[in-house]
Image 1 (cartoon, one colour):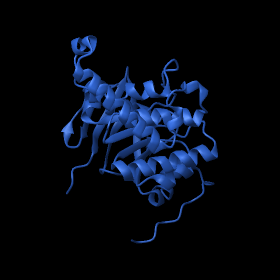
Image 2 (cartoon, one colour; image 1 turned 180 degrees about the vertical axis):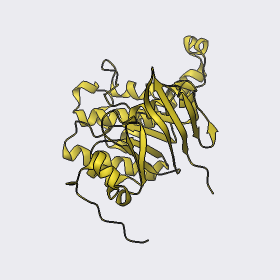
Image 3 (cartoon, one colour; image 1 turned 60 degrees about the horizontal axis):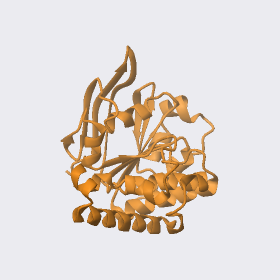
Image 4 (cartoon, rainbow, N blue to C red; image 1 turned 90 degrees about the vertical axis):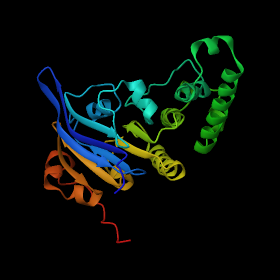
Length: 265
């Protein structure tokens, strides 16, 4: 059997007596799209923060590609090959789109502070490679004309794509997307959905997504994990999850639109 790209085992997270995650376990395969859903306060972002090193869990284990990364600092987790976006835009408003993407390339460089200060040939070569990579990402996303504009000059949906592009610059194997569709129009959601699927196929990336847009999640996900009050109450395919009575009661409601079970391959 292949090693899961991400394996969360019995994850427990307490804040001063409040249990935000209660023995949550799940795994995801390499190249897959897995989504976390559940009501507000279910523990989804807390789980993201435990995976990415922003929180150290009270107990339990997080393994990336078979390597235990539990409690590692965020910058070390990033070096393993994990990137993330945030629920609210975290772009640098005073920097151009190109410069925002170059921030995402920091993990790829190996030059030290002294080399940077002296502008050594190695530093200049790394900068040229980063700019070329950023142009390639912008071209792939269909937005090469945005390189020299400020994020604030773009629509909200395009700014979300810039943040997504910055995550791609980290050359990560696993990207965590925190509400990538939030605040988007129907057309922007469609474009982002297509983009995620295209990146997954082109770069063999895996995605862990937190999102409240249920039709999008049901359409895009290989697997869905459902949290409620910090506990996992279900996981499986969209068809299986949407039929789960506990999920219907806690989150979907009885008037949700069901998705058809996929035909056998």
